[in-house]
Amino acid sequence: MKNVTSRDLGGRTGRFRELDGFRGIAALGVVAVHFTGNFTSVYPELGAMPFMATYGAFGVQLFFLISGYVILMTAQKATRVSDFVISRAARLYPAYWIAVSLSIILTSVFTIPHMGVGGVSALLNYTMIQRLLFVPNVDPVYWTLAVEMQFYILIFILLIATRAKLSNSTVVKFTLIWCFVSMLLALYAYPDAHGVDPQLVVLKTKVILNLGMVEWAPLFSCGMVAYMARKFDSRYFYLAAAFGAQSVIEAYLLHDGEAAVIVCIIVSVFLLVVARDTTKILLLRPVQFYGKISYSLYIQHLIPGLLILRYLVPVVGKIPALIFAFACVTLMAWALNILGENWASFKFRKFLLATREKIQARAWR
Image (cartoon, rainbow, N blue to C red; front, side, top):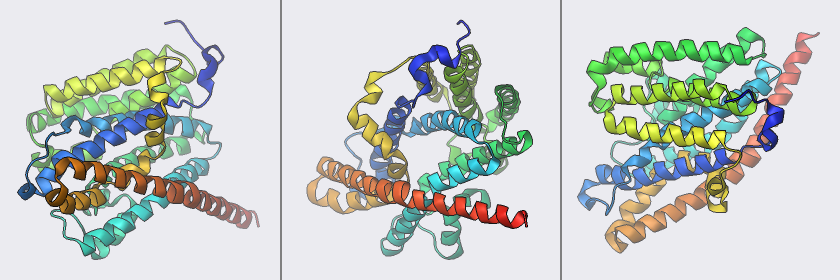
């Protein structure tokens, strides 16, 4: 590839709407696996669904690739460290707090096997980092949010260290070191993790994998460097591809060959789309719509969806119940997007900015 600057990329300097399409596909994949495989495991007495969307679980890998891309873009735009903090907090917390509240209410009113927490644990779920505090999630899908927060903390530290001047060379050094450590830890965990259910991995190894973000480091890094390749210089694609290859290797080490193949497909498609000027299929209105509500759909689909399926399947059958449940969680996500991601997020951001100004004004007195 030749050296390509942002001016050579034409429309690539604008909003990369294909990422929204990717978000929509990833969210739909997660919903599909939860409404089929997870429903069957939670309510085995109702029988298996006609199909199992097992591979939908890999939507998480796609989410982390996207996150790496978007978070670096946000971090490099920040002129102050607090810009990054306010941007992330205002974007994520308002809708999340609404979703957590609904989850706590529903799990208090209805009994859902293996779900629901009370007391202090319920309150700690509002932090979004309850997993790091060894507190169970009120909704199992929240585990990925703790991983995201770990990633944000790393970027936050980098911004502090660079005084909010996060250069491409710093990102390259950081991702190389992070992924080198990740590979070493993956090799260490291989005897305990390969071919083993993640829930059954020995505690010591599981703690190392979680705290080191071992499986996710090359995915976040791939997304970050892919952003640099699209925005600044296409030669970064070589490094992004190397991190993508590492994510495939680690999928094999920590899971199995099938997982490695699927991750390989996901990473390859992601990098192909990033390298192209545009990918029209990801810009289709339905795909973009689900991309728009993807965060709300992700954090507020499992518990309401399982309850709807639990009570409808015996009455109308599995397929009609699936269709109705999917329609319901879509409407709920749309409402949460409007209320939480738009209105409440705007208000919260305004509050955080005003608070920062007050703190700065007092500091100058």
